[in-house]
Each structure stands twice: as C-alpha cells, then as structure tokens.
Length: 282
Length: 237
Image (cartoon, rainbow over all chains, first blue to last red; front, side, top):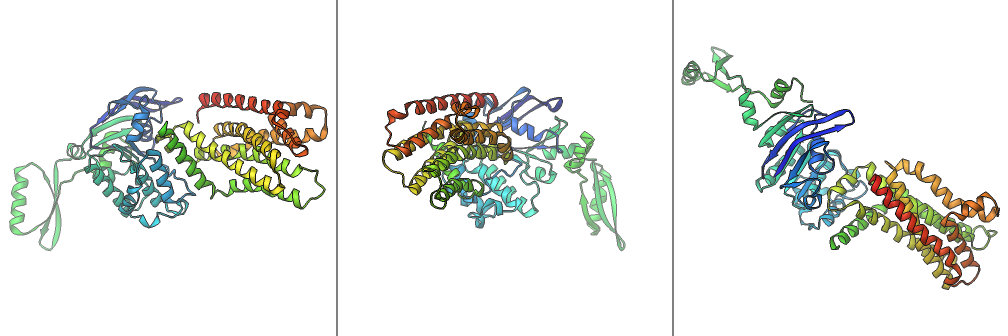
C-alpha cells in the first residue's frame, strides 16, 4: 500500500532524513516512533506529497506521491499535528466544507463526532473548543471522505487519557474495516497498543523495524520476576525463563499456595529505544 | 470541470460563512458606506459627486485588494492552506473562490452606495460596469500581495504603499493639476476609473465617450493577470 525507498531530505545543511526504507501492507497500522526532530513529520509530508524529497521515492497504491497527487488526494486522509481548523466557523461548518470539497455526504459527521464524544459541540465555534476537542475534530475531518490510507501526525499529543482512548477506539474500529494507517508518535503506550509494526526513527534513519512483540522479545533479558510469600512477607525471586529449575520452583510454590505474581520482565518500547539508539524518547 | 466548479462553490460558500464572523474585514466593508453617508448627508459643502467618488474608489482599492490579500495570508498563517491543498482543491480553485467572494461583495456594495447617493439610469450603468472591471484589476493585485505575504500582518507592509498609490494619487492629481502627480496618475488605471465616475456624475455619458478609459482598465486587467500568473508560477501560493 505504501512504499518509501531510500528517502533523503535535507533542509539546507541540515539532514532531516538519511535513507529511509519501509513498506506498509494494506490494512496495517504502522508507526514511526521517535523523539522530536527524528524526521517523523518530514516523512509524513513526503508521503502525502507536501514535500519533495532530496532523493529517493515514495509510492502509495503503486503510484508516485508527487506525480499522482490528483489520484491519491481523495484516497488519503491526513490529520496534521497543528490544529488547523477554521476557528470562526462552527464544527459543523468546518466539516461540511470538507465534505463538499471531497464530494462526500454529510452523514458521517454526526456519527464520528458521537464516537469521539463531542457530538454536543457540533454547533460550537471551533475557537471555543479545548485543544483536545480540536484534535478530535481534526481526526473526524480526515475520515469524512472514507480514505483508504490515513496519516496521523501525533494524533493524541497533549490529550487526556480518556480523550486519547476514544481516538484509539475509533482508529481500531476503522482498521478492522480495512483502513491502512501510518501513525507518528512519541507516545510509546499509544504505539504499543495500536501498531502492527513499528519503526524507530532516530536522526533521520530507521534504527529498528519490527512488530512490537518481536522487538520486546528480542530485547527481553530472559528472566522471570516472581513474587512469593515467605512466612509473613512477600519476596522477589529472579529466575531464568527457560531453566528447568524455574519451572520446578514455580510449580512447587503454586502447590504450596505461595505464588503471588509472575512478571516476564519485558522491556518497554521506550527502554528498547534507548538501548538501540542511546537516546531518550522525548 | 464539474468537480472544479463544485470545489470553487464550496470555497466560496465557506468564505461567505467565514466573512460574516470576521470583524476585521467587515469593518473594511462598512467604511465606504460610512464615508459616503457622511459626505452625502452631513457635509453639505462637499463638491457634487465627491461622496460617491471617494466611496467607490475606497471600495475598489481597499476592499478589492485588502480582502483577497488578507484571506490568502490568513490561510497561510493559520496553516489551513496546507490541509486545503491536501484535499482535491488546487491553488487555482482557492484563489478563484476568494476572488469571487471579493468580486461579488464589491458589486453588492457598489449598488448600495449608488442607492445612498440616488444614482440611476445611464450613469448607474456606466459606473457599475466600470466598477465591475476595475475590481478585477484590484483583486489580481490583492492576490499578488497575498501570495507575497507569509502572514496577515505583512499584507499591510507589502500592500499599503500600493493601496495608497492607487487610492490617493488619482484624487490628488485632480486637485493639483499638472506636475509629477499628474504624470504618476496617468500611469494608474484607478485614475481612469476616477475620470469615468466624475464624468458620469456630471453629465449623461454614452459608452463611446469613455472608450479610452475603459480600454486602459481592460489592458490593466490583462497585464495584472499576466503578473499574477508569473508570480504564482514563480512563488506558488
């Protein structure tokens, strides 16, 4: 569905992208995870045809993103990081305007606003909405024309957990219906929850690319952290994950009713990012 | 073609909805009406026809140029243009939609000003048509100012000298007579528009009497259009 090949982008002397390669299958949620300045937004702008790469190529549905903009625009939805809505207009007028541009019906407006929990604000001027509400309107705007590919640039940045969760639920539902999603974020929990595959972007390069589970297993220390009752207090025991000794001990504690908890000691994506790149995920 | 028309209509409708809530621009529309009312009814010593002359010149220069430049610059400043250009709308449709709003609103206010001063018959027809023509020139200049301005504030810096030149020079030349001002005025299409107004209000004119003035305005439209295309191709929106 989406293919980026050897993408380079320089801004003057500054190198923003240094040879990015990846491809995204149809119906996949693919995330670019990296700190600010890693090249996430630049990658999205190139893929959406807003920015010309210094070298390399990008295709969506087998078509060059710069040469086939007319074909691709109605098939793409883009939720930018900036809350670029028409502030004086109401939510309804903003969304209807985009429906008219895409020749899409108005029927989705109320449905999507209800899913993200701001149906009551439909006639409020955008300038009176909170940042979180504006983010939700941006997401709804990007979906009104039933795109086949959705680009989300930091979709829940600065949102409260409940608002973020409502956006995640909608994205998961749309993905189940076949929507391909490219997401950029520096929120590791969001990326972990939503993504089929993740690319760690660091200094304009892809430092790692895999499924979240594979990344975690690859960097897991191979240990179990077991909490066991010893007389009147709970103690922590560390065991090697695949040793026969661990299985025997755990079985014994279970029989004795002393086992309290078992943790697999998997690292978080943020810890893996630090391990691979040597930089914090901020 | 059908989809282009649909997109232009969508942009025009959005601009109409938006301008109703845009106080900065609404004030600009109010000013020529206000000046014409004041000069017509509260300053009886004003020369005959001055009220409409001033009101119309203010309308075509200040609104014709200021409104499109502000609309384009605001889209850039607030980054709404980015998402607009990611939709099926192209830059041409955006410019046409904004230009149409300005054009229609100028024609409506022209009729209102004519109503205030009681203009009718052949004079009204000539003034209306010449206003309809000079407004196209003004809107093209305003669009160029919008293309050159990264934000709303810079439309003033870039546009104000041009607006003042086109607004004040024809009027000052009519007072000062021969000299540099008169020479400058002869180069400006607004001077010829000013002449049409003066003559149309002083006597009954036929279109044959103002062929020179109308020709200058039409040629100015042509050259301002070429300049707009050149700037758009060189700089983009």
